[in-house]
Image (tube, rainbow, N blue to C red; front, side, top):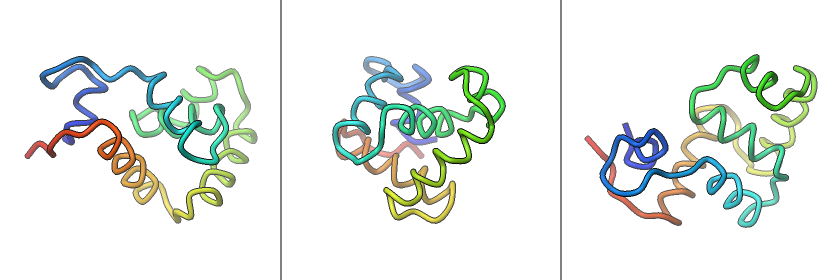
Length: 100
């Protein structure tokens, strides 16, 4: 488990990493919209597509559209790559060594 992910969950030393901070960072440092950033961070935290739809009150088709835009705007080709990209961005911004 990475130190950034552990901070999201409140499992590492230091202050927990609030969800809205990651969304705001993505919105300000990338071309992603707030809605796209929400979807990306929720996916990173392990939410399923149905859970994201329910939490954000949007349809499955809207989620599919957001993912197309996220991939295009980040130049990533898959979920694993996009999660690594997000992790890297968060590590650069907030630091922290990787946990073993």
